[in-house]
Length: 479
Image (cartoon, rainbow, N blue to C red; front, side):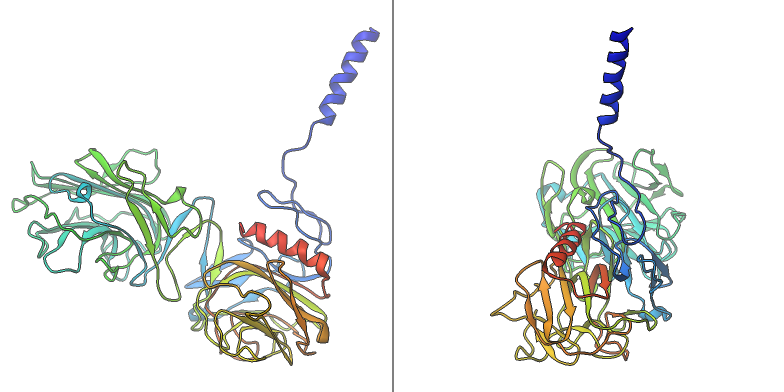
């Protein structure tokens, strides 16, 4: 019996000693927290606002209407005007290519013999359109060049919601541009597969859809037959998806593309397979997954750029987008952390500010001896404190980083990614609230930025505290 009791005690002791591997839920304000997929969150006891990546975001109409404060203080960022709401680029666990519906934002791959399909063709795209009955046709994929007599095929979604395959036999015009007469039926913002096939032996075009990867394709609408169809023209233009023409200028799509495939033959040889879900956030070029391993390039331009998304963010267009809190008590000393990137740089554009203009402003620099130098940054709360080429390296355009700004009179500082901070006098103005993407007191100086997370404290953090918070945010951003 003694031996049995001893063995039982060993078993119980061993069981108790096993580590807990299930992540804990967030706990009360002011304590250290652990959240699934994140590192330990810093002490939030002095935080007055916390705008957390992928949490508390309400989308209404064109964009974000509220980014709710997660600190427990209720200092939400809001935007009542639909035209001024920034875009929410959401990530729910699967990477994708985000498309703004703006010409020049698309993906492309060079012409290759494997893509010069003249016979049976099978095209498939996994896509989520913001609007499945769009105001303008949305091109999913095509080999349809803007060079003279260089048109082959396009698969697109019409304004009626119907998939349409366009084929050319001579490269100069559409020989076939029919539909099956039935819309996809997908709800706006939902994801599905769209497929089109052409069989030259029967002159038949068929359309299919499915919702899940594992589902079987189901034919959509009627089979179309056109006796004028012959061999598809073999052009030498780019294969593009998200828009057509070699420059992506025609029928740009608005939404998300997860995968794009082209088969030579119906259920034939896979000659192109852009598996975007396997690519990391921010990737601008990768090899597609067929045996041809062609190079795919993500082309982007303007304020709202096509991109591969791997985590949630809010994109401000630099034209009229901003979010702002109501006035609340926020007086120096103050520390603001922001995980973001500058998409473009325009002198005097304001990344954030207090409730009134120049009460705690972080801007694309215009004074303090570093006037008009892209991509440098500065802060102002009555005096200029700037980053410079001789001190702190600025945050390069289209590059995420965490910036810590301390507003504390003559002991203020600005720091990027835990590099040596620039210190000095930023002035004594009190923020009294928070405006993101704009100056505090007017609808002006909008910045073209992409933001993942913001934390505001009503204390001046020391170097040790800044290292912890910057480290946390950089891990959130995958830096």
